[in-house]
Length: 283
Image 1 (tube, rainbow, N blue to C red):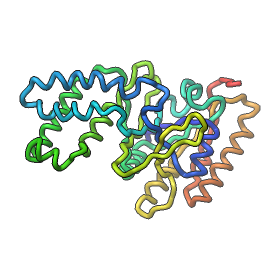
Image 2 (cartoon, rainbow, N blue to C red):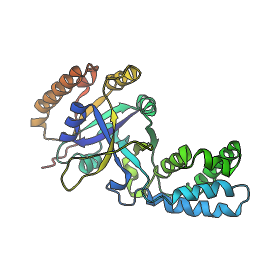
Image 3 (cartoon, helix red, strand yellow):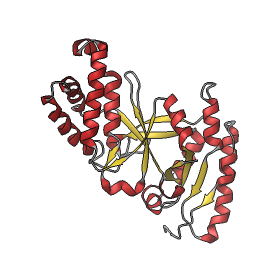
Image 4 (cartoon, rainbow, N blue to C red):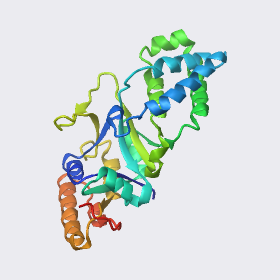
């Protein structure tokens, strides 16, 4: 089975277990300040070039009108496939001084997240494929416009852009600066629907918009998926000195088991808790 891991601090991991939620943060508040804009500019340039093509012009026009939205309501929760949940760069960036990586089996996460309107996408690094992606997207949009009966009819059916706008933003959000390629990021993407509201983190001075993906066993229609997600989950503790490792591993495993038991979820992953093998002391 293939796994992706969400790295977080000790407090962050504790919050996930106690709340039964994992948060996706606004793409405009991530630590890479070029997020979204990095791919939007070359994507937009490629779409402009398509305006000269009569066959692609309608799709390109629609694409451009959506691409100029300043701050689309897009939210991201990051996972990594690097190092099987034990990657030093991830520990340093997201779990300092101590933390955990929680791993979910990719296919199960993909299926479950899709039910809740989250997409799981692997990031592309660099912009080499942007031009072809723009052409392909414009071609898809052209066909959808034709099926709707033309541009005017499409606009009347989807005055705010509808699912196509969401598709465009999620495509653009998959591209990241090459400097982040070692992270091997897979991201859960959620586009806020009209009428939905984001929440805000409670940190004073650092309030960030977020939406939550539920990991609770509280709905009949999601119960089998949530249970499988937790049954197959894996947990890795961040690097620490050997003299601390075993005692802290036992404490964490007991905490995981108690929290999942409270929520009537499988506790198998408590037995998977392991300590990072990286010989790194964060203090």
